[in-house]
Length: 287
Image (cartoon, rainbow, N blue to C red; front, top):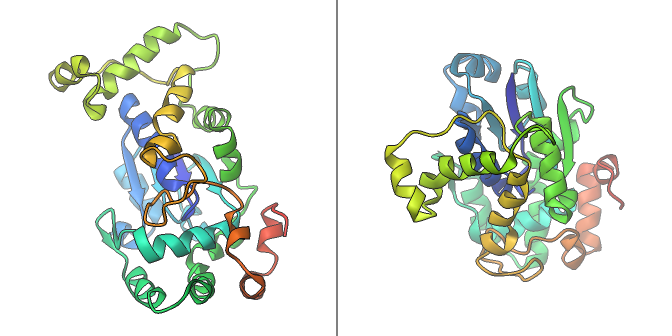
């Protein structure tokens, strides 16, 4: 069965992808990341492409329902965020840090949007960002939140208790060994061996791992979750900053929930409501 991560822009997707890529490397799973339809252009649909290429894990960075509907049977998770925080995070990212080519795919809309943002003050830029965010928020509004086989996860919960959230995610994807099913230490040793060449550490394992084969491993040990959450913590990804310490030029700008309250004024919230209606409430957040 296909496993998948349905991502949303500025919703901890880089963090989630980092954890998933290492997990897939440890288990020798084939990963395919889809950003735009051009990537499956030779095929009639995303589903046809997936059936032909047969990845073990699909990552979609802006999953649209009509694309997902074409997939074969899938076990997946969908990670969302308060849309108002997506707007604010998007504004700073699109102004300063987001790459204009992602995974080899150019993003011309971002180039034009960034050029416009640079002519505006923050208040005007946030108004422009409210409209630009439609390409991310409209698919969230159209999404079926009771879709079979899909675990719905909020970013706010995932960053509050990452070990609990990632245990649920990896368990749902059937990538985690059930509790009480064997020697955790041996499985963790196999994980460390398998990923040593990718991590480059410890050096005592990294060099021989380049020339010696991986160890067979079907699922990750439960202890892997805490290890991965520590390795990919905000502090490490942000090069020493703690959550809440801001660097507007970093992809990992602040790492907190509810930052929209610090930036969105009445005019921005009015524009958001006019463009997206009750999306905030429909996703379970308070207005």
